[in-house]
Length: 357
Image 1 (spheres, helix red, strand yellow):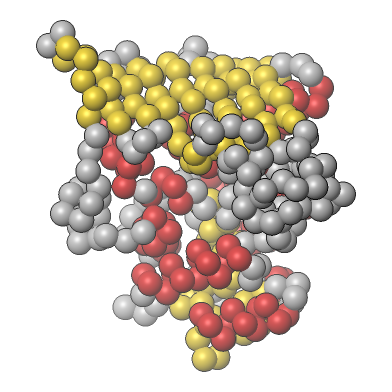
Image 2 (cartoon, helix red, strand yellow):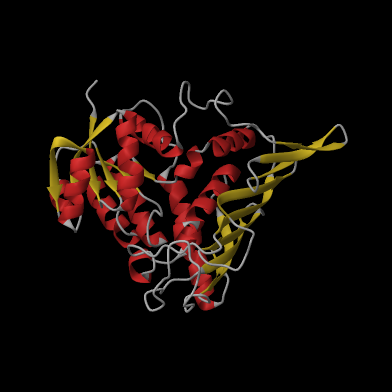
C-alpha cells in the first residue's frame, strides 16, 4: 500500500526530535514538504527526514497547496489555530502539537473547522501512549477505581526552565509551565476520569524566581527581561458531577516533590498514582493492598508485537486513523476542554476571581 504524504509546518525541536523521527519509524508515511520561517531549518529537516524530492517553503500557505494527506503543526502556540484551520480548510488531516491553542476561543475555531471539513484533528498528547498510562486507562474503563471524585494533575519541575526558542515569551506561547507541561498532566487526568465538563475554576500564578542571577537552572541561566511568563501556576477545578481536581505546575519551584505528566486518582473502589511508578491501591478481604504492574519487555503489550516508545505509538494511531484503519485516541473535543480549563486558570489568576462556566 502506498505511503501517506505528510507536510511539516515548523521545523524546530519538537518536529526534529519527536514527530519526524517517529513518523519515519512507523514506515507509514513520507515527509514530502517542510515549512519554516527560517528556510535553513526547513532545508535541514528536509535533508534529514524528507524524501529526495521534498519541497521546502517559508509560507505555510504554499505548502497547503500540495496534494498532502496530513499536515503537522509544530509552531509556537500562538499560530496553532491559524495554521490548523487553514490546513483543515485545505482538506488535510492535522496533527497539532500541544497545547491545542493559545486560548479556548482559538481551540473552538479548530474543532469547528475539523467538523466543517470532515477531516481528522488530533493534538500531540503523547503521554497517553505510555505503558503506565494505557494500563491505568484500562483499569479506569473496567471500573476498578469506581467513581473517581478526587484527582491531582501534577507537572512540577524544581529548576528546569526552557531557555531556548520562545518558551519565555508570553505573547508567542500564551503562558509558561501551565500551558507547556501542565497541559499534559491535566489531559492525562481528564482522560482517566473521562470527565470533560468543568463547573468552576480557581487559579493562581506566580512570577517569583525570574530575577535570580544564579538560578542553577538545568538549561542554563535565563534572561530575567525575557522571562515574561509565570514560573509556577496552580488551579482548583470543580466538575459538574461534583468531582474535584488539583492542578500543580512549575518550571522553577523550591520543592523536592517533583514529577511531570503525572496523575493521582481517588475513586470509590480504589485509587492510583504515578508518583513512584504506577501504583494501584485499595482494600480487598478487609486488607489494604498496593499493586505495581511491571512494564518491562515480556510484560503487558498494548499493541500486538509493539514495544514502541509513546511518540511512535502516537504516530501509528494518527496515521492509521488517516488511513481509516482505527479511531483517534486524542479527540479535538477533549483537547479543547483541556484548553478551556487552562484558559480559566489564567483568567482566575489575573482577576483574582473564580471562573464559573
